Image (tube, rainbow, N blue to C red; front, side, top):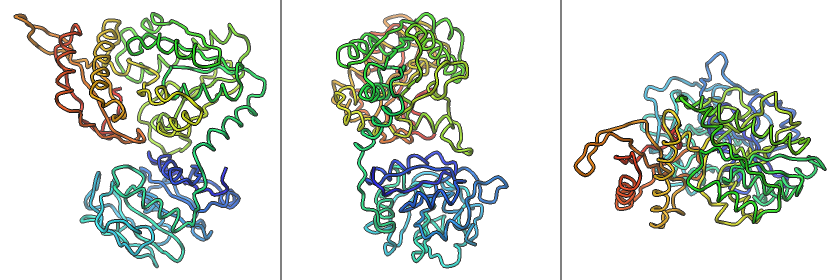
Length: 513
């Protein structure tokens, strides 16, 4: 691993690990640490640079997360983003005030191109704003290097001390030249050389897993999706047949998916594979449950109970592995920050106390989906598996609004299969980040033949994203949507209406529940 490292200090923002991921894309190794990290530890790490994240707090709040003012005297380049920019100004004597106009979303920003941060950036660029406070007066010695129509201080710097701050979010894809700005900070300000590569992550983790596990046994939760597949193959390379993968078919998979997963793992990988057909068990537990978080909790708990039962059959198992990735961690508010907001829970995050495993292993916990795919390719996993459509652990349960019944599951499986088939026929399957059908809880009047119907509406979803932290609704050609709608209402019983979800993330999430 490269000695070159940049630290992201987390002040509770939703994009904390996304910043680290953007840094790694620039071939610079990066780690996220909480804002209260001791300065002595930072000195020991000796980072090339530090980035302050955004966060939901106000710098004037009594419980606002703050670091020591001494961090600015360490001679390490620092970039503050959003709340991090405000905190830098506040701690160094500037003034932060409530903004007269709250900025949220894409905003035109005018930058001073003489700043190293904005080298080769267009004078007027589009950035992503999300703030209610703003820097009304920069700290002494800082100069303003960017502004918007409603935000006179969109960026400031004190170049002689290598202190930079931006009110907007350069890490999100909506900031048109954000990647260039971060690269400028890393290379022009911090002097990084960019020697870190993704394959070093795969190699290093296989080695670490081999050392950690030794001659003990590992039980891996396998869904057949990208994340659990990469996790299983990484563990297989580390410890071989000490690994047992248990695939629980909870009856909430896509059409024919259970059989497809079994075929792939029995024939293509050298590992112990067990399939548990537990469909009715999950249906019984979910009967009558409508609340999304309750669904997730039931499915997560039942998964764990199934694994516990299977583990007892194969003897003592010291480690339990699962394919948690960073968006799961961030959205559940379990990213290690005391100040991160919870968006939704994920079934694969923490083992209950009653489970008899010594330790939980989550080798992909700090990666985003596209990084997971890169690791998969590095591990030699076939491309068609690496680029398989993302599928949540709770499966179709969170794509069915309201209660779960076998009838609803069958309706959605058929509708989703038609949608995916037509997307592939149109050559869009490689261009869309994620696409699927969902079954709404809405029934509406329709007419088929000469009769009145009162049946379900199916919603089609398609998004474009690189990190799954933010996403835009994808533009699917009307002729494709029309073909999907026609086939679904004609071929799937109890559906008489097809809708298309054109909402981005935020404000929506990619999944429906």
